[in-house]
Amino acid sequence: GFIYVSGQIPYTPQNQPLPGNPSIQEQAEQVIQNVSNILEASNSSLKHVVKANIFLTDMKAQFGEFNAVYGKYFNNHKPARSCVAVKELPLGVALEMEVVAIEKDEPKL
Image 1 (tube, one colour):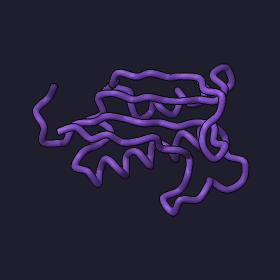
Image 2: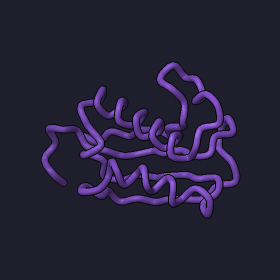
Image 3: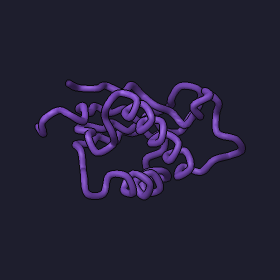
Image 4: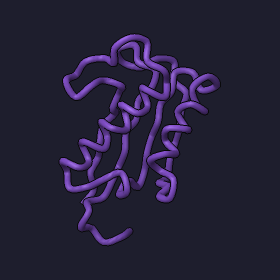
């Protein structure tokens, strides 16, 4: 079946913001780790993502840095993706990511 992971922001698993003034790359690492943790707990993984939606508050300043991190995790496997500039996000964060994935034992789509 499908697994829908709602928007993940750069908060720790303890639901705390990252300390200090984290870079977009540090925030992206946390967001992707959050997504990965949810997928692993749901019999899936980043390799099983079929669609990703990314929201950035400053496309010009953040897109390249975000993409550098995203590319580390989605280099061979490239799911469909949308990246959208938004005016603001909850709790004043700079980025958010949501994904749709399939379960590990699901036949390839």
